[in-house]
Image (cartoon, rainbow, N blue to C red; front, side, top):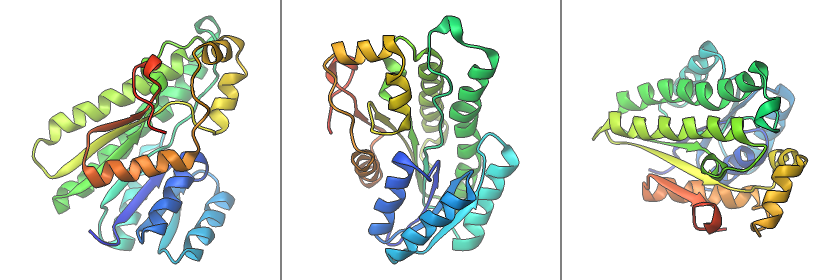
Length: 246
């Protein structure tokens, strides 16, 4: 489809921002979402500067009414929803399991798991009405890598992985693709926070993991997933369970 309508959560920085720019460069109509109005308006100006039709809709994916409003406004503005990239996520508080608290757990699971569930709930409803669509959930290679200091984060992303798998099982032949993207080490604020933890940093260094990927590399892989209709793609080094394609 030419000029697809694309919705991206967690779009204001890192992978989300790079993905929004990549779609805009290909002529998509783009809706970006996040929690900061100033950053949202700045990104919209940049997207429109590329010639794209673009809108910013403020939303916190932890709150169902925000998510429903986000999808409803997207469809009201453009008439349909062709692609959704669920990128909103948080690393919470990296550190040993013995230092985790109910608050740090909730910070990760409310955004990474509940936020993805709510996003898919309303995105899928919109796509089912039109009989077509594509969703990419951005997970992490760390979701199947036992790196010290990342336990709660890894568990939350593993939960996201299963949400994607169940969605595929439930959809059957409805013409909607649900894919999962597994970047490993990406040059974003998250990897800086993980490297601040000595155990995780030592594990990364001793593993000879590749240098952090640029967010643009992950954005290109997301677009390839949508073009091919594949169920998943990884950017994970072999020693952590995947094949690095950066």
